[in-house]
Image (cartoon, rainbow, N blue to C red; front, side, top):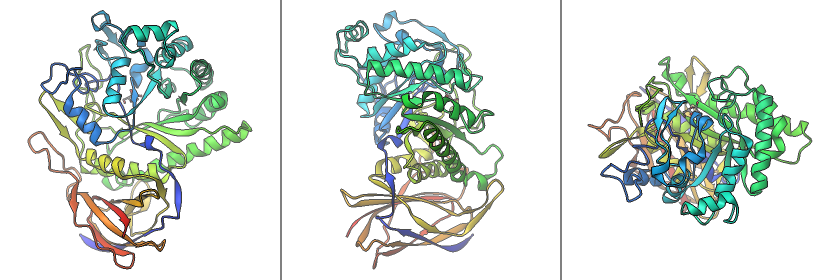
Length: 499
Ligand code: AHR
């Protein structure tokens, strides 16, 4: 263990872009126990009168989710949305092929809308581009968004929802580049189908925003050619291009894993280049932004097939401190790339690939829950272009990288700022000098730290609060300078106000 010096230079005039509130979104799929036993569990002592788990709703509200993507995922590509609406007792039980589970359809589109309202999040719906048609995509927009008076909006009204749901964000399929996807297509076939679907959907409701499936990760053989091809075909009909990525430390190479932000940034930068290239080739005035609508740590090898059971335990990863530090860096990247990244959804919000796990009577929060909660509640206004000087950490995958990974926000309306700092070194404490360069007098309001000496430290049902964010004394600012010691393996958050 040793101590080195670092420096963070902040200027509220040096902005990157407004932070899109939709960067703090989540994803809820009919997979494992995300919907059933996660969000919806009428038999739980925690259930409210609608069958929603009160403790889960509260934790989701605490995380200030702004948008929730639903219903999949791979599930989407075999889903008939009509199965999930209308009287519950008439809804079919089906063999769900993507996750080899039994789908009871007791939770569907209308329950999802009520759920979103309960946590004050916008809904983001997917239309099936696997077994689904452009007609079924258009129909779902009619069902959700058209005022009563058409066959499908009247059907919605007959189901108890006279007012339209006004869903603004629509994913046109899911991971259609993946050979595992039900109804997988090549890029040109998908681009054509997605363009026609989006055309019909926008004829139903011109105010909607559509999201084109990009590659399911940058590891795909067809990446980034898939993205270019599909974009060129569908450009004018799409508002966002999706990105998906799941990080992990399968090689147990913690130094490289803790430099994941380098990887995330390269991925965004390549797709930003692709967007610019296609826009130029199209001679277009239209802009398409990025929607990172599946991101999370996922690599620990939990089962992924349900053996034809209801609500099987799938992909219920236990997250540790190093996973939380990767999540914190991911959020830093969202802020640093906020000029092009406008939507992001963590996959998923409860139980399945999630930092929140339920048992009938309780809820367990993994360390990354605390990292997300801090950033989603505090990053407001504009992202700042922070200047950082820090010692380097050697990594096998990326060579030398700075020990400090930083992002910051500043809201001119409230005069409040926030700084988010990951010390990715496993051994070095960073004695960090902060300097506010814009001439305004600031004070540090509050400070929090999520830290530990063991990167593998976890929370368990028996010891649920081993790794969490704790408040620490706020450093005093003198002549616009402050100093704070950032321990190895830590995530620190500072909020500032005008003094
Ligand atoms: O989130 C789990 C799965 O990961 C999704 O269903 C799919 O889109 C991705 O491959």
